Length: 348
Image 1: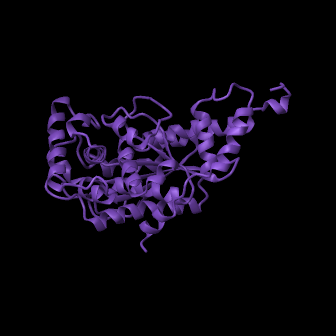
Image 2: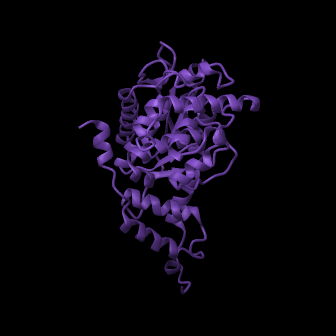
């Protein structure tokens, strides 16, 4: 049995008994029932994931993956592709968006190269390179099915290494010039919507180029004809190595009963891939923020996720997931430390 098959078979529903115990405590806190909104939802979800009434969320990490994309040659991104190799080492140096925010919230960052278009090893970056970028999905499949499975299994492997190091909550992030193009293709295929309805500007594409980008995505979907019910097929035909690796983290966390915090639009695409492989993994996801990228709402409707934050962010990298860590910890701290009616004898 492959690693992917083994992990997928070992994802189970949340523990309802622990969730009920958490709800009883939440209902006895000195406040009106349900008045802390999503903070209460987070605590009940965490209880169900950890199978415990109380839990520790202090040791946290963002796992970020980087890969380049053959479809870049179609002119779907405004920036030079070598930005991927230049920017990605900054993730662990605390210099870029996710690095700075992670440092502020006390989270570590693990950076993993799964397909950057370069030959050298990058400082502070784990080398799991499958190859130097995907193929151009507008001319054929982005990768082979075997490569798609490998990208998923890399995500599983890296997540399990972090879990062995006692990380209690994991966020996902990415880097890859042009990666909103495969992400939009994935969302379009799985959600059954037209690319022109959900194609966004990504890292700053001029609006007059949006139609061209949408047409490239449409052409890639028509040419490759991915099966919307088969997450691996969709990933192989119109995906990216970093998207597959993030989906692998979701599956790995779910099988090991660790919450996984989803970042922005690229990670929604990864979440859809993971969901198609095993729908139960959705229960382990926490959506960090409402991305400003087009197509966000379509993806979230399929996943039935309600993001914690709405900050008009579209940076990616894992920046939104890192920012959400503080809200999750604040929820847990409130749940543990707020007095109950019984403790202060308020007679309710």
